Image (cartoon, rainbow, N blue to C red; front, side):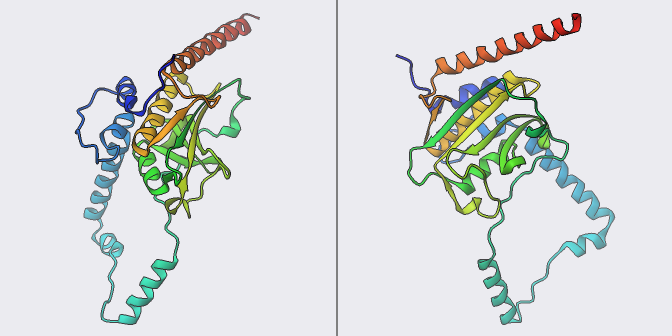
Length: 258
């Protein structure tokens, strides 16, 4: 009998994607080290942005002063109005967005193969949108085309799409205006071939993030046939990708010779 792929196996898959890292051993801390192991570029990018802003502030003091906000608390009516407006306004999710230079799904050739992992919550309430967005941001999973999430081969949401993420149930898309206050019963991660320039790496990233979701959000993983995701299934799909790439290379050589 095949052993069902359990969420705690996430670390093993992550180590195969990135260099090994030291675990904190803190079960109450969500993702952190594991998410950074999937994508270290987010942290370095943030640091670069902060340094750029600091340099800008030093060279242009007036610009720095203009960006500051002063609230006059002497007027109680203004404070009350501000609080009411804050409560009434929807919380806009701090999403990372795909770059304008990123690949579009609509530009791809017709798919010849699709690999899917369904991540279904054990809790009837589902995944909290705010926690989900936090994990996506740390893993450089970005909101983009078709109002769904994508992970790209290059940092900052550039390059070819590795895989995409949709809500497992209708509606399949997400709304930045409501996602933080919503719960989602399940997420479906999928990649299509031909697609990413390095499909094997794309699949490993998809599996790793699916396992992170399952581990931290108390969920079960299923394959494209809605059967429990097993290690045997993962190995089989890895081989499918290798076989697909081989067929593509053979076809390209034949076309070049004709």
